[in-house]
Length: 238
Image (cartoon, rainbow, N blue to C red; front, top):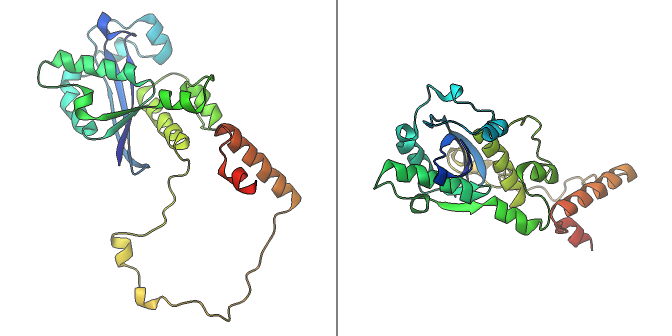
């Protein structure tokens, strides 16, 4: 599965009022693993940025004076996201702005719905944590994601943070490989594999001490709280 974690920064809140995208950040996941492929672009909006928006993301018109316009990068952007599943926090906001930019390009460019599927992690978070704050900062605290380097909003930085949050909210560990494939498998010396002798030495078992058991119980309690009382290990213990 190819997924693109996406975020945008804009000149204001409403595309219907002429506001435009000024930054796009995308991070690629393939089968729930970071590929290292990203798409990141600042854009010249041809209009003033609202003061309130500058306070959020810190991007000024002066910073964008020499940047390309959306029309200049549209084909590259569409090629990057085409056929993937977009993962966005508060998707209607970003999708609305992207569809507005596509509409300004003229007929033939369609809408995001024609190019990608969309998953809204804000809806997902509200279902997992009803009645609680579910913005990125609150979710980072809840899932122990380090966002201490985030002083202002930025599209690529927020996309990277959201990617970690999405993986945590939808299953946690993702990097464990249980098999070997491709060229690695070709290098295995299959004929050299033999079964273990029945005369092997007994396995030494080192049991956890009281302090380790206490830390283990505390960790399970934290996991149970973060998952809404759905910690699998606690259910097994019971």
